[in-house]
Length: 283
Image (cartoon, rainbow, N blue to C red):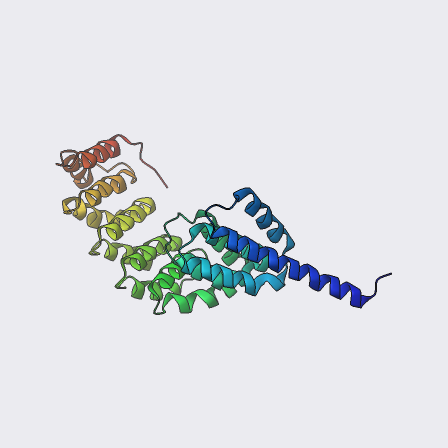
């Protein structure tokens, strides 16, 4: 029978072998001629192993992949790290996610919010400092992820972030405000963001307000029907179309949709026509 010493040696050898396999995978992920099937086999082997000894090596390779702008390597290595370290990998994965490498990051974003929701308190300890830090990319990612573990106290932070110099941060604020539902302070912040200098932020705010269908927001939504940007005007029509049918005593929304249906831009006209025909959503 093997003694404990032999078991320990075998365990060390297994960990060493897996570290070598990880190095092989990382090297292959940088080689455009490498066989993807071979890499997938190594990926599955490492993900299934869940050896915590691999965590520092995974973190090192993941950081190198992000630095090199290798989105596919980030995708693969982030998955293995998440499988291996669970929610304790959140900070590392968030930093990797925050860098725009040109891919959609659907799988990594899903992993992040699942991990955050496994332990919201621990996640918030990581996210709150990042959300007010000096790294714009990390601020944006942290504010986005706070939307999956929200607390009412976040509204103060979000009010500050709504004034951020980075357009991406302000756009993330819009999405995260949606997690606070019809809380009046959240609605007020969304209304303020309708005046944002960025058309994309204004569009995002219109989308959220249309979804929330709060009657008191209609006057400020209608004001953007005269926005200089045709996409913003189109989203005014989309947002208005999500509200219940206008009451006869309040003809302003119908009149605004009529105005947009005669807009100089064909996309705006199409959206206004569709909004007038759309069966209204009711809460």
